[in-house]
Image (cartoon, rainbow, N blue to C red; front, side, top):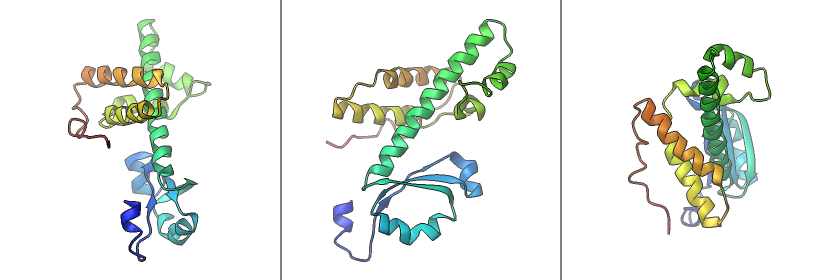
Length: 175
């Protein structure tokens, strides 16, 4: 895409995936992971500042996607660990909400648990982890936790009778 667009001097490309979800989008508090030319980012920052409270420049084109991919990996990892921990506590007789509130004050605190992400559908989680693992395979980078997280997310979605990720069946990895 960058190569094709570079033929038109009027078009400048940044990769700029967003994070923090729907509420942040509505309030202009998104986090943008940006890859591309820093000067191009400087030029469009007044526009991006309207939708994001944090804009992180990570490097050349593609770097924004890498940042978002790592963010998603950590999100879904924290979610699955939080669910397991809270369910473990419940099995041992601790009220789930009391435990959650106590853990929010501990070293085990994380956004997925504090925001009660386990109460919402994780529609893209399986797709996100599949993409992460495909890239790890391409790099021959061992990611055993990511594989376990992907499998745990299947159980999470099945237990809550949630739909499968909308686009995972049709997704084709580049060759």
